[in-house]
Length: 464
Image 1 (cartoon, rainbow, N blue to C red):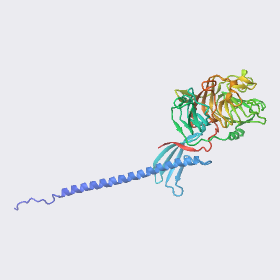
Image 2: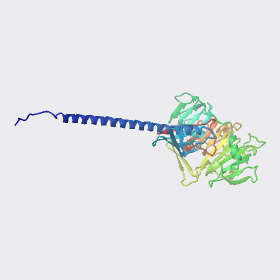
Image 3: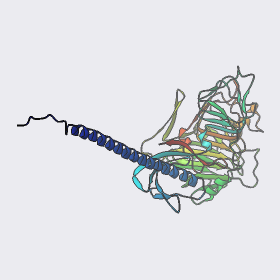
Image 4: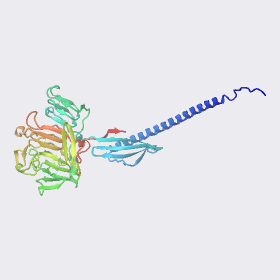
């Protein structure tokens, strides 16, 4: 019997197999990593393409907004580029108002429609009503004083004139800077929301003739000669026009929301009560939406303007809304609307000349004191070629003859004027100003309210 020999043959096999297993594991890991990375790159590419498609949809919508007469379909799949499309987007309207629109744009790559990206974009059209106070010209002689508070955005195409330390609670923009009555230390305004000097003007329209077309339309109201309008809280208006038969009528608000008052031959603007003048006298409580335009002046009265004798006219203290309250507490503006109302209350007053607070004279007595110690005006006010003003300061009406009590003029809305007018003296006769923006007017306006010349749409907010 031969002795057994010890042999190493086959002892390396387990080691070889172990090395092979490790190599295969590494190869598998590398292949898997490469595959995963490739998938991630493909997903990233598709995700980026989807985002670019969503962006393209939003930019296309902006292009259509600024191209007059063009429309773009909502909730419809739109492919691009034309001719050889590789991606698509779909637009959905979120809000659609006169001055503001918000859309949601969802995009994807045609080769991978399961990977989508969405952007939500808000567009705003520059409007006069986005300011509580806008003027094309601010005379150096008319100052904002320490008693004055302006709650909301303010703009002037010239300079802001300051006496003491008036408070501006919204952002202030000017084109020419700030003028101080004495110097910047004693007359420095307080800007609670910032100040900016712009490089270009915001252009006013030349007149309100655009609104005449709406008044002449079958769904609007058109009057010739002096017209008094009492806003009734039941949603109607009582109109007194001496040139009509009958002279006094009670009517619903016009369907398109516009009343236009033109002048008649024989007008005499030195006499604001002349029956042929294209003047409006207005007061009361508005229930609904309305824009009133006048060829000449609009006077806001503290008494019912459809009554001939002031002593018989009921006290109104100006214009307010029935179902919409605009509140100001600790410099914060809030709007409360009655639940269930058909539509928001909103008024526009657009005069080719002045919009004035009537403080002297009435229809049967040009010398009677027709002022109220405190007045309210809830409206977007536009005086295209003149001013928002106390009637005592209108040329031809000597201030000494118009002793307005020293009360407060409360405006809730917007004031747009060619040239800043005075409502009171600094520390003297007239009204102190309490002006607050109707914050709804950042995105909405009264019916067919005029826009700045050349006004276009721009993106104001973008959320991925």
